[in-house]
Structure formats: C-alpha cells, structure tokens
Image 1 (cartoon, one colour):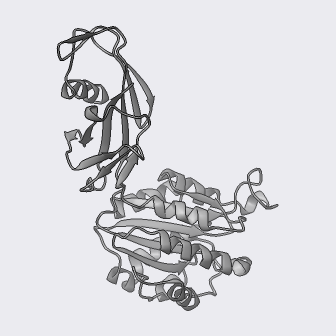
Image 2 (cartoon, rainbow, N blue to C red):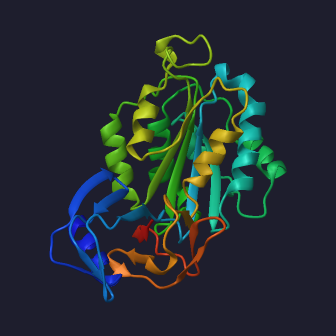
Image 3 (tube, one colour):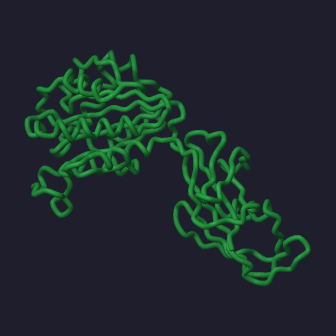
Length: 314
C-alpha cells in the first residue's frame, strides 16, 4: 500500500520515469524515495538522482466527536500528600484541553466505592475551583488499588455513568496511583474490554516508576508496571508520580487527544510540489506557511484518518 501511494504521488506531481524508484522505509510515519534514473520534468531532462521525495504522515486523533475523560485516583492513605500536585496537574490539564466537546469525571480506584459516585462531570468553562469541589466530593475512604476493576465497574454498573458517558466520543482514562495495579484481571483482558467498549481509546498514567528510573527511592513492589503496560498499549503518556511538578506530563496527555490542525514538515518543500492525502484520497482543504514550515488544515481531516503529506525538497 505504501509503495502504491509513493508511485501515485510521483504521478500527481508531474514526474514521469522509465525506471522503478528505490524505496527505503525510514520509519512508521515516514517514507524516503530516491529516483535513481533519468526523469522528465516538463520538457527538461533531469539527470540521475534528481533528488528526494518525502512523505510525512500522522493519524488524526479520533476525538472530533468529543472526548470523555475518566480520572481513576488511588485514594489510599499513602496518597494523602499528593493532593496539591494532583490538583495543579488537573488545572494544567483542563487549561490545555482542546476546544472540542470534553467531559471529565473523577472516581476512586476502589471498586467497592465507585457505584456510589454520582458527580456531574467537569465541562468546558469549568475551572480549578470546580475541580477542587469534585475532588472533595469524591469518596476518599477507598483503600483498594484496583484501577482496572474500578474503571470497568463504574462504566458498566454505575447507573449515573450512562448519563454522561457517550458511546460515540473518544475515551481517555488517566490512572493516578503510587501502588501497583491489583485487579483480578490481566492487562490484556482490560485493554481488550476497553477496545470493545469504545472505538477510540487513549490512556495516561501517573505512577511509581521502576526503581532504576524512579525519581525517588521506591521499592519495586510499588511500581505501577501494569498501569504502564496498559498505557503504552495505546502509546500514552506515563509520568513518574515522584515528580514535584506534574504539569508537563498532564499537558502531554491532553495534547495526545487534541485534533491536529497543522503539521510541521521534516524538510523545507518546493511549495508547488506539496500534495496531501487523507486515507489515500487527495485532500484539498489545506495551506502551507513558509515561515513556520507547516501545512495547516482549513477543514480538519476526520478523526481516525491517516494523513500523508508528500513533497519534493532540494
């Protein structure tokens, strides 16, 4: 498929050749193409190795129909000194969320408590005062560290959850815990269930790292290996809970769900050669800013689509 798209791109920019190009895959998101024989551009014969064609690509986050955010918080005694960091992180997170329709709720990581949670979610326009009230109103007596079970039980068994969670929105789950995840299901079972529940899933975790990477002297029994494994399944952000400032990490988490409206190019292109494909189909609703070397979109590509930007550069 990538080979076909590369050949199609050469046709669209007006290059004709009597040879087959050499293709080298440079990475998951980039294709490097070198033309190794004589190419005709208009009426001009260009010598061998006329130059390179580059294709930058990305997948548009599937959040254009909104995103539901569920923050699952370890409320055991050992987390008592993390409130200020957590709320500062939530404030940075809310301030950095996309303007798309989002809803955010908090629940304890204790499945025996989640069925009692009936708080209205935070929505665009709410601020840190509202987040503080939500945090204070959440059940704080949970002693279990079962984030997977808590998320699943809340979504499936809490009647109030169905009043704000939307079947057609993306879902971001953020786990916050200084203990290992202790549910009775495997990581694969949890991620399989989430994938069946929502077509577009994102995940982030603020956890204890492995001692070799941790910023504090934590024993390996407290490291959140299961949270990390689940989060990395979705290419999510994993942050060390020992960090004094969580704001950079939570900003990265919010960036991961922001629909992409512009894309910085790897090289400075010949402007006239730029073409854009969305899911293999030519896409015309874009422009190019030479000052920032970015392609911007006047109409956002659909969520979940593969966007490819091809061009020649000298």
